[in-house]
Image (tube, rainbow, N blue to C red; front, side, top):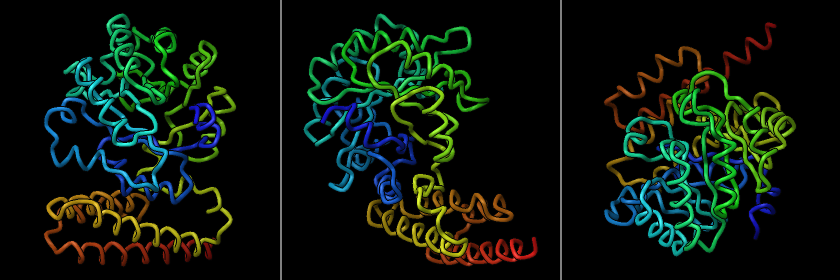
Length: 328
């Protein structure tokens, strides 16, 4: 299937996020109506040379997730081309190259958004990957390195000329990281400058936000990242048709399912931290959520006790909200 056709059928979907968009969370988002998903970033050197348990976990996906995009993080031609071959052999439907990560420990190594600093060198890198990649090749970028170097349009033109099939634009600079507002006008400028499909990303927290981004920028599709953390039902358009009680029951069942997916996926040594991390995400909207999240993380109780506490507080939060709705 051509990328353009795939994007038309998967207009709103989950964005890749390190430590978040693992197989259990991707599955839960798909259950809730997300379009095709993308793995969290896979370090190209680790994939080629280390073959660690963590790398094995990150690259694992189920048939349910097909078609799937697999995202690579790297900066040297040798490991990126070799890892692209490996991911193709594993069954990836799309190879996505991360050129947008703003985290200093990544950019200091010349990876992520640092690749936007030297268009000529990055063009050579893309050419080498394109030459061995038989499936769609996409790239995720930012608006530029900093406010004095906003080069998303020029960079996107280069990517198109080197044979990239699609681009995702997060319209904040590397120096902004996740602060301030994303400038959707930059997505629009990229859309107007190239012929390959563009996906928009940044400050999308609802289906309505996604529709507004598409209307304003004319991008082909939209990725939701941080807006989906602890909120996988952001992709579920039918949720608004439910009553408050039905909606909260649906959310509770979704969380239970997510926890079971985590238990099935992660090795025992990683279970407690993964469950605590995700429960803290889901507790974000609770009353006194900050204290609750700290309590979850600091608890030395058996993890099943922590889960039981969470759902007691979940039910209490639902009842409190119901009473407030009645009194209004």
